[in-house]
Amino acid sequence: MSLPTADDLFRPTADPDNPDAEPAPAAPKKAAVRAVPDAPEQPAAPKRPSGRIRHDEKMTVYVTSEELMEIEHVRLLLRGQHGLAVDRGRLVREALSLVLADFEAHGEDSALVRRLRAE
Image (cartoon, rainbow, N blue to C red; front, side, top):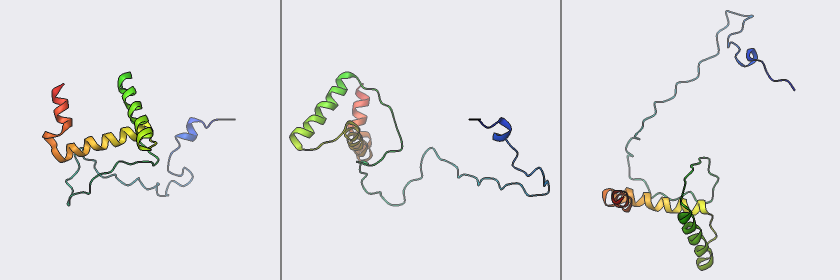
């Protein structure tokens, strides 16, 4: 098995045998990305957690062993007492959705702001 050489990987885009040929078109310019999105024109419908779909994005969150035990305890209660078999990821996404919805609805008076200020 042979790997491509640097010349193969970094070859010129113009045809060296035909210097009069037009070079390959440049990639279209991307739209500017704003750190803060524009305000929506109409109020959005209430957001729902993504549920059981394939997730393309990943975020790692470190929790204490006590927090992990609480998550597992709730997961087992949901299964045993309510017949809901959910994994830890779904449980965390649902909880996150609730906290973010409360923050959007109540802002300064949300549980998230109150708890973060109390630290």
